[in-house]
Length: 282
Ligand code: AMP
Image 1: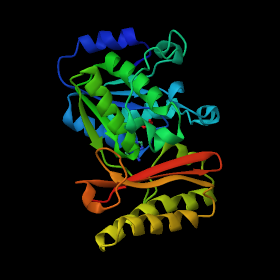
Image 2: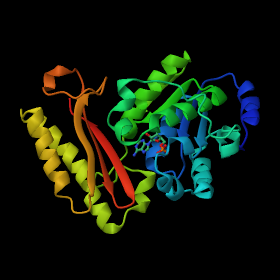
Image 3: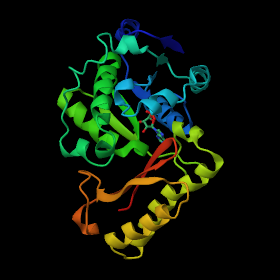
Image 4: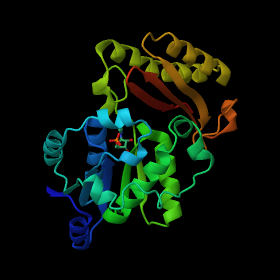
């Protein structure tokens, strides 16, 4: 596995490759969720590139950026075991040579960037689009692998790729969960044992909403029941949202028949950690 720190070196490698390249962008602190994307790419492409870069411009909370887990040595070992071809691990200066000027963060995703995560994390998706555009230009992948865990991000990046007219196919891989249902996340290591217990409420709330749909209950009932579960989780300090929406537009639905595919999405805050999850209902 090659480890590359600069765009120039990455591009030199890329020019020597003619076969398909699959690309998995990450912020490191790798877990099975990330590795599932890597395996998917390895299966479908002769070459796989992974990036590890904790992107400062997508953090709306400086505390969260400071506390974000960084485990590069361990990540390198895991990626070596997976047999990827190239790890791109640039410095902040490499990706932002002009400082954090946002002259290239002008993408506007309209409604999609203003709701849910967008509403609760101002500037987050601008930062995501900014770094993903830079990474896509650097790696020039044929296929991009993203996790359903960050569903709204998948929709934003698909929209970004359309805006950039880039010939990149996007593959969304299912959310990998712990045995009890908690969605894997790099931030989970920051949870105390009690918080970890309370965090299960996200999965339970999503499952409950799905169950109500399957039993013929209404959207309102599903939301109400899910909120009850979240409200009763002792260490959840604030529920940012629990929404049931059209999976294509993220516009809330009030009836299951309003959309072909319906998704439930949730975000909560605990002391020091914010967690998100989602599940297709229909
Ligand atoms: P991150 O390092 O959090 O920026 O995530 C990098 C990629 O891994 C993103 O496409 C995420 O959606 C994906 N990812 C994170 N957690 C999971 C998970 N539990 N299951 C599947 N994909 C995940």
